[in-house]
Image (cartoon, rainbow, N blue to C red; front, side):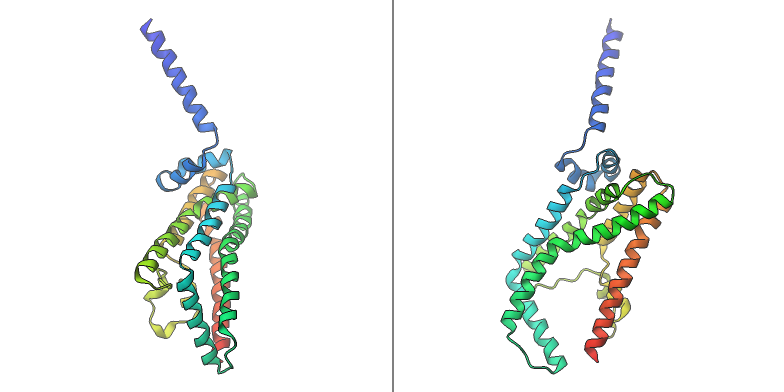
Length: 249
């Protein structure tokens, strides 16, 4: 009798575990597992790809973080624009209007640019993962990339806190800070300026996620994730270098 009861209890527990494994995670569970158990998160996203939560979280979060530092950002833009016009030797326009325009553009960009980057990365990653024998669709890749990006938002929260404490908008945590000042504006500088510990965290989570969701080895997943990223930073770093070279001339 006791054995039968134990067997029944075990069957009920197994059924409950199966239900928990197959149901889509709540937004809170997904946020939690990004940090404490990403493999479990991505296993769930394989069956239930979700994108709305990370889109809203990152878009709204980025906008709120820039709004918290709006005054210091305005001062930062005023200084940068004044320096730019001074170097070019051109007549300084109405900086107040120019800065206000730049503020609106920056706020919109903060909400939109991450999503555009995710689309670019997901499109290429999905294609490469399928070439490497994976089984998935664009939405699967987008779901992985969007959730993997959440630590980057955490990095922006930390930067905002530091910025508010020291009263300075620009807080650099990227790897370009290790370079001498003589290399500012160069290609290596502009590439390293796009890389920090949170971006690396983002790439690692993406590699884990693509591997779990597409069912491919981590090495192939790393290629599928890193090749689009390297392409992106080389293009943007190259464009920034050309812009800096043109401004210097």
